[in-house]
Image (cartoon, rainbow, N blue to C red; front, side):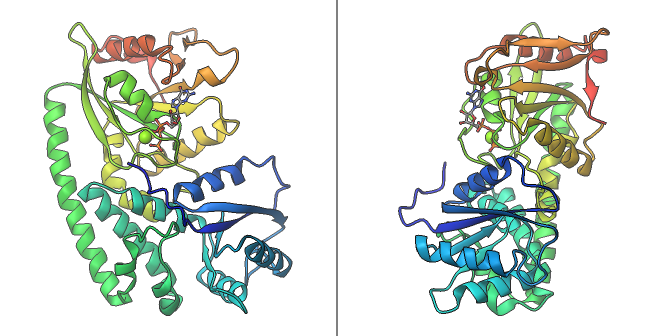
Length: 381
Ligand SMILES: Nc1nc2c(ncn2[C@@H]2O[C@H](COP(=O)(O)OP(=O)(O)OP(=O)(O)O)[C@@H](O)[C@H]2O)c(=O)[nH]1
Ligand SMILES: [Mg+2]
């Protein structure tokens, strides 16, 4: 499933400002652009820059705001996305200033975009509950600062009529009640999940979870290992629901393999909290396959961001195997299992796309399933 390719997608001006540091060769702006596109909008122009510190009123400062206004007019765009977290006051000031004397402009920040993607993608009952909870919690942080009337008019970024509208009509008190109800519902669904998990534990099957940065190739790898058909797409957060399959690896070795939601740097806290139940699959796993896109220049940052989220959900102690995926895109990289002098696995190089290295990976999993190689697995912590 993908977002409807709406020909009348919002045209967005993306603002990617570096605070404090000098401007880096910008993979960050590229990731932000992919986020915006994954939400269903179209990036008309990227405005970059750097500041020593954010401007209190508008984050960007008046010169940049003028530049954004010109870009909006030039591209007849009506959406501005900041690749940072904005305060309620900054959003309000920006919207007021940028809408002056023209069509009304909506301003979103990075958290809005990620929440918007999740809202569009959630399919399962549990996923929908979790996203609604995350959105309400994000919304309530803004309501505290007295922003109800503006929030009410805001919609989904990609003009696909996200599920947000209805909720936004609620006032703060009702939001509080709704949040409580949602938490209770999620807790109940989580209980069912725990029972299912207990069933798997009792059968003594090794539980393996695929984790990693969004778009690293987890679902592609899942399909390779499980010979199955999970949804794969070149978009961020293609997978939101955990899928688990029993995989037979020959000679009495079998595992329960889970594909999970991708991580991203600065994942909104409300989302981490809301998805805790889903991510429990990860915490409870016996082994994590940490999938990395080895062709990404940002791979080190991605690994660090994933490990940060793992620590946040108390999964840093779970044994981890680093799977360097997409080696077909890196000249010179061969499929191999790299071990240190003591036989501990440092990483496994594969291509989920071509299938190179997958047999070796399946063999490592089979060994782990038979309990033959406890010393060869490392943890992130
Ligand atoms: N060239 C190449 N492309 C790959 C490889 N593995 C995955 N891809 C592509 O990378 C994109 C993302 O793959 P997914 O499997 O959806 O990635 P994911 O990690 O599940 O992403 P999310 O569910 O969004 O977190 C798709 O276009 C895949 O076809 C690989 O080994 N080589
Ligand atoms: Mg996926």
